[in-house]
Amino acid sequence: LTEHFNRRAGSPSQQQQMQSTGPMLPLSISVSELVMTKLCPALYDVLEHGLRPHLHSLFGKVKNSVWKVVENSTELGPSTKVLNQVVMELKFLTFTEPQLKFSAFVFGLLNRGQLAYWIGLLQQSERLLAKHYNEDSLLWQSRDMYNSLYHNMHASLLTLTQLPFRLQYDDIARHVPPQPQPQQQQQQGSTSS
Image 1 (tube, rainbow, N blue to C red):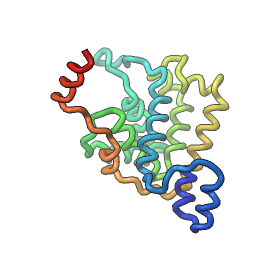
Image 2: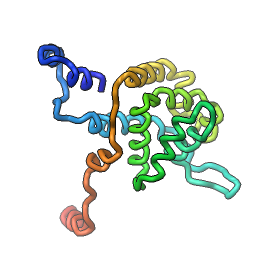
Image 3: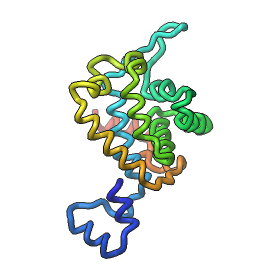
């Protein structure tokens, strides 16, 4: 993402020099497409790893999810005001798929320069980790065994805070592959039999 911003902002000679240093993504790829296809799935996988299947609540077992982690980690408080505002904005959107809601959350955090802050807050919260994750999860292990990997990831996310993101929630729907229609699914099922 950083290279992509640099290539778009640089002069033609700077862009040519950067292209000569190795394989690059075409300039026609939008920033939102890079975020949707590279960053969001990678972060979602990290957050999904080792997630407890259920949470215990006053109402019994409740299905756990990455989105539950987002909601619990952004509950309104002095250090989470901006994070909570992003979640409140998303309540007005119609995304029902968990990955799309998460991508919208990442878009909002990138626009505000808060993605690294949120990941750090989550990783440092023993209460949230104990509630949502098994002890063998990447997030728990990042406090210890995978600490250097976590710090590399966090440092990479920190570089993104300096970039002028202007991601639009509308772009999320454009990068979702179309779902096969029921008739197409039936045809595919009969040809594979």
